Length: 558
Image (cartoon, rainbow, N blue to C red; front, top):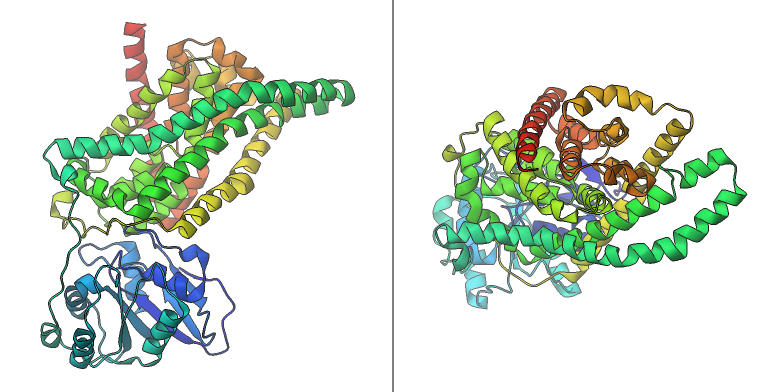
C-alpha cells in the first residue's frame, strides 16, 4: 500500500529508502520531507506501509519510506519492500554506522541490487563516527557515495549532504568479498539490559514493567476523575439538567438528559475515557521513544513461545492497549506463521484505551473499582490460553528476534505529535461514534424498541443470570468497546442493583465476546473475511466458556 501525501512533480526522481529494521529510515524520511506521519519510533516494525512524499530542499526528488527488512521471517511488511525493489527507482541503502559492514553484507546477499542505482546513508553517527581517513577508505572500496548522519537531528547542511549523496548514486557493482575488506564495526549496541537477562527474575520484572506501563496511567486517571466528577456534576451537569427539563420538549429532554442522554451519559463517558486514553498514550509513547519496549519483549520471548508467539509479536499486542486497529496493522511485521496468533491475542486480550476507560467507569459506577485489576489479569491469562489452544504455531523454528535498538533520549517533537494524534482520534472519531450510540439508544428507549436488544441477548443473559436491562451494553460493545458505557445509564442505577459477581461477568463478557466491528473489519482487510470470521467465533466460544468457569468460581466464594 503506497500512500501519497503530497502532489508529485511531473517526472520526479523516485528514491526508495531501504534497510533493516530500526536503522532510522523513518527518521531520515521525516527530516528530508517534513512529513509528520513518518515520525520515527525506536521500535521494530513501526513502519508497516510505504509512505511517499516530496523532498523539502529538492522538489524534483520523491522519497518513499519502506518497512524495515526482516530476513529471518516471511512477514507481510518485508514482502511489501521486496515488491517495491522490482522497479527502476534509485535506492538509498540505510544502515547503522555501528553495523555498517555487517548490514551491507546482509543486504548484498539478500537483495537483487545488481544494475540498480544505489547510494548509502549511515545513520547513528552520534553513536559512532569513523575518522575522515576511514570514511574515505569505505567510499573507495565500495566505489559508492556514502554519507554519515544522525537521522533524529539534522541541520540544513546535513540534509544537503544526503541529497548530494542521492544525486551521485551509482550503479551497484559491489561484491560480498569487497565488503569483507571494510573496516570492522565497533558494534557497541544490541545488548539486553542485564536485569532483564536474569533467569526467571528477568521475565518477571519485564511483566511487572509492562503492567506498570498501564497500571500507573489508569490509576492516575482514576484519581483525577474521582476528584473532577463531583465538581462537574455540581457546577455543570446539575444546572444544565435543571434548565433543560424546564425548557425543552420531553422527547428532546430524554435524548439529551435521559438514561442514555447525549449530555448525561455522554459527558460521564468522556470524563472517564479521555484521561485514560491520554495517559496511556503518554506512557506507551515514552517507552517506544527510549527503546525500552523491545528489551521487555526480548526478555519475555522464551515465555511467549510457549503460547505460540514470539517477543516480536508482543509489540503489536502492547500497541493494542492503545488502539486495536493500529496493532492489527503493525502485525504485518510478524511472521506469517504467527500473525494469526498475534491478531487473535490482540482481539481478545489487548484492552484498548477506550475499553479500559469504559470498564474503569463501569466498575466505579458500581462502587467496585478494585475489580479492574483482576479483570485485566483475567484478560491476559485467558487470552494466553486462548491463543495457545486455537493457534498452535511452531515458534521454535523461528529465528530469535532481531538485534535490539539503542536506549536513547526522547524525541519530544515526535512525542507531542503522537500524543496529539491520539487526542484528535478520540475527539474526532471515537467520541462522535459513542454519541451516536447514545442517540440511538435514547431514541429506541423513547419509542420502546430497546426490547429488541433484550431479545437478541436474552439467551446469554439468562445463562449467566444477568438482568435483561444490560442487553444494550452487551450489543453496543460489538460496535465499539466503549459502547459498553451505556451500562452507566441512569447514573449507574442498573449496576448498583447487581451483585459484584454479576458486574464482573457482565463487563468481562461485553469486553471479550467479540472484537469491535472496526477491528474485525481491519483483520478482514489485512487477511481475509475467513480469517476474521475464524478469529471471531473462536473468541466468542472462549469468552462464554471462560465466563462460565469464572461464574462458577465466584458462586463458590460469594
